[in-house]
Length: 615
Image 1 (cartoon, rainbow, N blue to C red):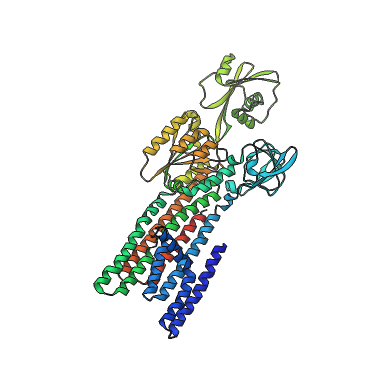
Image 2: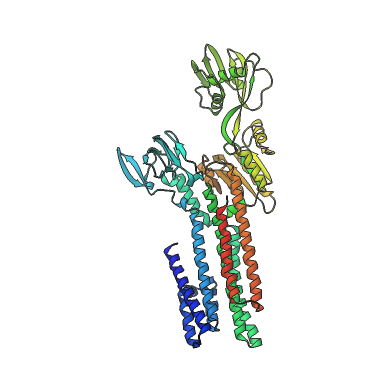
């Protein structure tokens, strides 16, 4: 607990002890009424002096209708009509609830506190051959940063020297250390666990991954959910209405019956019960807890409104390359010509593509069992390569390339992406390659369906064959191929316009061309690990480690958070309205009124804290 919380706890304990003593004394001894007032006033002021002073300051500012005002009027009124024990108990119990609320909010903030400490304040850089300690903001692009074991990487960059293991849990939610070595890119906020590494800064501190995460977390509370906004408006009218109702309840029946004490007492109970703190505290806390639970898993949600919208997802739209697939090609089919074996065809193609850095070439090289370094290679941009391998002239490229070199390609053009191969002017065969689906993509789509997502759609700029192949592998029934970025945006725009009431359209993408679509959808999810800065900026939710399976986890967290919010709203309003009616009819007392206020608030906060423990 903080010093402030401990101080309040001590005040509550002292007040409670004095209250119990006063209560026993009042029951066991015949004490003068004025002395009894003083005895009860001591624990009352110890417990509630800050509530009374806060109420007075707010009145001077013109802010009448808050919980401090309601508590002050109720407890002072109870003292005036001689209900001393109830007055003191209401104040003590109210402060107990405030203490519990403070501790609970503190715990919910701890769920994302690790993110708030992502960025180290200082960095050690090499300048003029000497180590110099500077503020992280002063590290310039191209400078070399030295990161020792136990230290955090201050800026995004590339390792130029050394090997180590990094703890990236605060960034991605992944607890397993990540091995790094020379040439690999590293993210700011990662903790160096073992060896000393030198990192060449590729971004300034303000543009680093950690700094952007901090900005997202700090701004997440600014984007309130519709439920929160409704409750803010509700409280604005609800509290004054209740105060007016309490005044009418105290005055009108008292004039008619002449029994002022009874009706004023009922009106005071009415005021105690009316405090909307159970809703005002628990609902934002539920959303904050949900955002914190998501951040622990490497899912950054930019605001409660996006979490609420994600919980109502009815349609998920996915980009293909880099989102559902790895973006890396693998050999899916080998179609050799007669007299040529599959291994030989792969051997010729891989040897010819040995020096190529094209993604398709990498897929062929990975699949080949045997490769020979070519004697010579000539590359023809946009067509293919010509290589000399063991005295053979090998061509590997598109159909036009072979035909241009007088190689006859028989039969129908095979569907899909691939490489045509010839040896010494004779057609040798075709190697088809497909974009590799992410390992857990099919499982993620299945989990989304189980969570109530009615439709999953894939959009891609790839050809029909590639789109169909990926859709069949993942079990996607609806897809659109050959789309340009603006056509993707138009497609999602139409989906949003034609969606069912109460549902939202979610788009998941990673590339710079996905940024417009991410902005147009009801909720945009960006793959943050390799995703572009533009996509991350435009998205409402960022998955830090590119794990497509976390889409389902994000929806699960959002749905549970919404359920908790709904439970709190129904529970708090139901209890309050019931007790308000009973108070007006004289069927309850101040003790029940205190439970309907503070007790309900405590239970609602306890329920809200469950949002932080979503697995």
